[in-house]
Image (cartoon, rainbow, N blue to C red):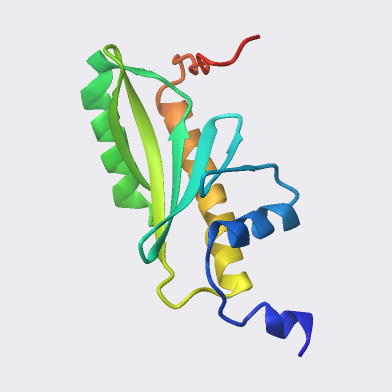
Length: 152
């Protein structure tokens, strides 16, 4: 069996398999209690198993003031209606801001091949970064939030 054939065989789609995809792509990540974390300039990303699904979720690093909730809802709805994935949604972040997340899920009841998992992960990253570029263009004056635990 060749390497290419092995990449098409089903295997458990666990977080370690996702880590293997990111390693092959040369991306940094960390594993914490069954959750994989990675990120980019404008996205904090988490991958985790939830039952028979592999969940990919990212939080946009922009903080939307609550008084722009209607604009945030319109932007998320517009994006969701015109794009297949990811699904954008927003929620309260503290007393004064809203956060936007992007989410995708892959049914892995029967596992996934390396190629299937790689396609899901890489396309999720690309689609999320494009979605967050849309948010940055929609809200160009927002200052991205800083991690309160970051000490620089």
